[in-house]
Image 1 (cartoon, rainbow, N blue to C red):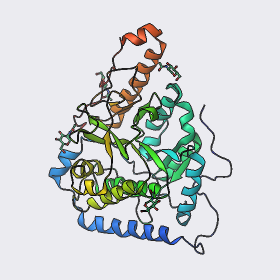
Image 2: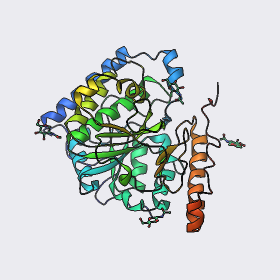
Image 3: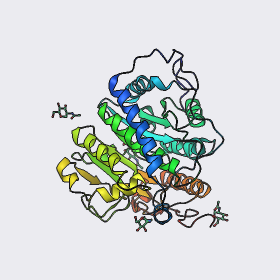
Length: 366
Ligand SMILES: *[C@@H]1O[C@H](CO)[C@@H](O)[C@H](O)[C@H]1NC(C)=O
Ligand SMILES: *[C@@H]1O[C@H](CO)[C@@H](O)[C@H](O)[C@H]1NC(C)=O
Ligand SMILES: *[C@@H]1O[C@H](CO)[C@@H](O)[C@H](O)[C@H]1NC(C)=O
Ligand SMILES: CC(=O)N[C@H]1CO[C@H](CO)[C@@H](O)[C@@H]1O
């Protein structure tokens, strides 16, 4: 069963200390300043162009944010770095690798995405223990409280003055900010010396993926479409699943990625990634970039063809939360059917995924 919240943590606040007198480490203060100023710059200069919106909205499946929850005002913001240090230390594997996912209110409801996500670790082969290394990063109060109720490692990511829960438009300004905030946050994780496997919560895990990562490769990313070679820059990367090692190259790369958002206003982090992967600066950084095969890391865009190989399946290429939930549940069912087969039938690869079933790129209402 799922772990109980760790004792000693109170919902909504990790600390009861007075915040005003806290001394902040200088780097963190600078980080907060940058985030804040960037936020305001974005607000001023990043209008969403209808043309880019139409192209972008189908590429990545995203959480919709419900409007009825408060920002995480109750959480002691000044305490962020301390809370983060502790949660990473608690969750990290011996080699300082953590598994990270982000959660907002809409995906945090009972019987919604987060439950399916966690269930997959329980029915996967050798995945249950990985939950000890999973940190759920909550973007709003509802997500944080739900996390505290069902999982051991929760972290509330807030930005003062920005309410990530108050937006519900798919490619809205607020939504983009949330995505970019995540990129900047992941850079901080790397700077703190942690490697991470980032996974969207609409990725179900059936096998431990670590053995499938390349021994040499700083930044390894799953694909919507994989064309056969892990080096091929034409592979269409999907930011919903990646493995990143902490080193100077990846830190530089995340800075570059984050700074590129200013060059492509209104674009999603993933689309900017699919542009900058071709930038000459990538060679200067020397980042070792690898694309992960959809046989191991599949999705609805390109399902894994082999149940004997599949590690994860992503509900990408899917518009609409209800459709996504139906298809994710089908994936869990298909996996259970596979696990119930005899070894001989397993090897004969008789099963195929029943997805996409409801998932579709067609808009729900237009
Ligand atoms: C599950 O994992 C065990 C231990 O690694 C392995 O022996 C077995 O073949 C795996 N089963 C499947 C269906 O992958
Ligand atoms: C980055 O490079 C410096 C020296 O150039 C080195 O001291 C440091 O350990 C490196 N940091 C990481 C995270 O690899
Ligand atoms: C899912 O698909 C079934 C059968 O095609 C359909 O009856 C049902 O309305 C769909 N549900 C959603 C939420 O799209
Ligand atoms: C499913 C998919 O990949 N859709 C679109 C993603 O965005 C590119 C352009 O950035 C389009 O060409 C794809 O059709």
